[in-house]
Amino acid sequence: MKKRVFSGLRPTNLIHIGNYLGAIKGQIDLQNKPGFDCIYGVVDLHGITTPYKPKDLPNQIRNLALDLLAAGLDPQKCHLMIQSQVPEHLELAYLLGTIFPVSRLEDLPTYKDKKAENPGYLNMGLLYYPVLMAADIMLYKADTVPVGKDQVPHIEITREFARKFNLMFGKTFPEPQAYLMEGAYVPSLKGEGKMSKSIEGSYILLTDDLEMIRKRLAGAPTDTGKGTEVPQEGGVANLLTLVELFEGKDIRMKYESQYLHEGIRYQDLKHDLANAIYEEIKPIQEKRKFYEQNSNLVEEILEEGRDYCSIIAKETLREAKEKMGLV
Ligand code: AMP
Ligand code: TRP
Image (cartoon, rainbow, N blue to C red; front, side, top):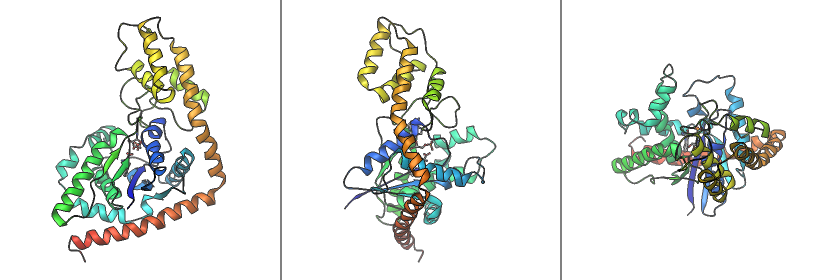
């Protein structure tokens, strides 16, 4: 029996190299492994928990589907779907919500972060975010979830949901595991925290050209380039992490040695790093053009995803309702 994989991204128009290395690369990795049945979602219902413009949303959803296909999701090897087209996600979320303490949800760091980011937009959906995410995963009885490190608390809570449901109503759901890649935590260009679409200046987008990448890297803080210890945090440490992710460990070690001896010339480091990043994302930009010109194909891919998911979703929901006594 194949293992089931589920993962999703919110449609926000700003897909950065953190999303790519942390989440999308894991999705690609798993679709290419035998023994995994992969479902990937544009999770639009999660997208509407933070401020957005309804008239822009359809484009954002479509853009994310294009980005994912361009980045390497292969419709022959995975199913790509739009979350709101399979309403069972919401129904299961409601059912799961009835078995879980509110206090546990209020304590989640992700909820606290969002609360701090948008104090004027504290809606029920935000509190329900992890419940819906657990439903996304559990609806397909997925056991493997490729995500970035910041999502690990959400996977942990999904495991709690599964355990609790199984305990109350009988074994139904597996306890899923996060699947983390080497780039599970891509740091911010600003010297602290992670690369994030909500922090201007922290990211490089998948759609950036070489000039833009250079410009964004130019803003990353550095130091004199020399010292007795290689910094473990801050701007330089973050740049070295990016060097390792895009140019490999050997190049990172070369810079570390320079730091301790003759000194790093950051202009050169940033120049080479920009080239390496662009090399990696250029093919994605080219492939995106192909999908942009073949919108019928994209529609077909999404229809296939919706139909495939609907069948599984209906079956799981029927089972869950039956176990809960809702017949
Ligand atoms: P978000 O952009 O927050 O909706 O995240 C979409 C996916 O990208 C999730 O799986 C995140 O864990 C992942 N992700 C977001 N930011 C980063 C980052 N800086 N490094 C690694 N993964 C990330
Ligand atoms: N919360 C995830 C994020 O911020 C998106 C997401 C929603 C997700 N449902 C999911 C990820 C299910 C993995 C599995 O990116």
